[in-house]
Image 1 (cartoon, rainbow, N blue to C red):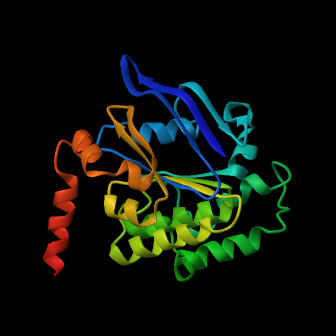
Image 2: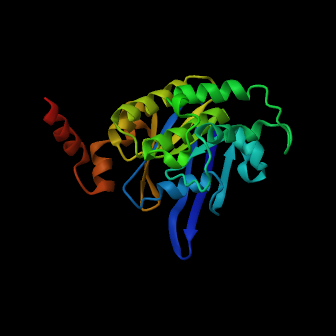
Length: 251
């Protein structure tokens, strides 16, 4: 579904993503892992055309740069790590913004499936009771769920998520990741997400891309990538041992 070839992102003289190639197939959940500064968020921005890059990104064989924004939005939904809102929109209004790409024209209100998708997205994310509340009054976790609902309402084939559990407490971390896993069961879909919590990556991911200083340190099936040796080389510590020691506190 998604293929990146020789993708490079530079900010001035600094290269933050360096000649990176990978692919994502239908039914896969690709976990993008690595320490701070590895280039994860910059890669997400490049994939979604938010920052300039060299190389190519194709979606279902079509160069994303050749797709009009509306056509791209029908296929790719992006949840950023930080969502800034400068207007007093309600939660429902934020979620309905996800349906704009499905309208037939710029000023058209025709969207046969829109109402069902909006209601479903609000219910899935637990935001139905807050639908009339201003997003400016929401907590960080509630706001993240509102924007996740917007992406669900968009009903794309591919979800790109930059730290989807950012600001969420434990119950909603579990809820959101379980929702995404259920969403992925529908044929023709795939997910790429940036994660810092490697336990969540191991529990929900099918594949992983491990980044180090903008380069690919390892990629492939999750069990083959998040190995003790490979994590040690990227993080500079015994990640496997540290995670196991944390678990012993619950015995």
